[in-house]
Length: 197
Image (cartoon, rainbow, N blue to C red; front, side, top):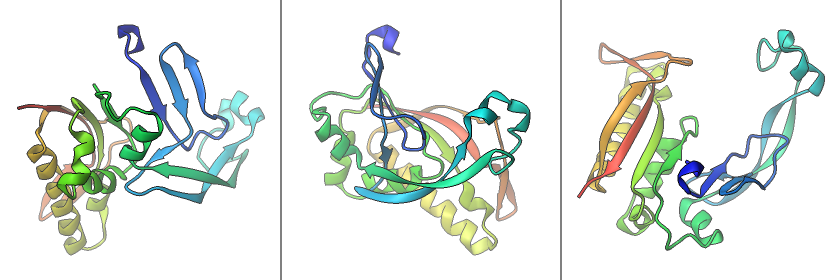
């Protein structure tokens, strides 16, 4: 995207050895997570020793040989706060890509919870959303139905905000399946929503 003269900002608070940096012209990385509230708290992260990185044979599991867990402070901000800090409140967002490992429902639900909060999406043209439906793996049928209803509410609110599903495909990297009322669903998808009048 930066080859099309776009300004690309990537956010990820899980990259252990990364900090706020300009990676190239128009490409910036920020050690920050997107959330529905501004917060700072400690998270447990796997730390992979550099020797193990070179020896990929030992990289069999997140808690396998050469991996230790360490506590690290993580910073989370809302989309409107991030835009204010970057002085991007008047700049349109061509593509908002979210790959936040099942937090998309909480973040999008918060953004769409009221007209005043949803204003931050007014100049967003596309939302590329990695969808996780991990709640459909819950033990009880009632929990699975509750989760499915919440997802449906968020997707309806997104639609009412002017975003229409333009394309979707299965995420084939690590697909899992869940069941609601006798119907089996793939849990992970890549979906693109475009703003339509």
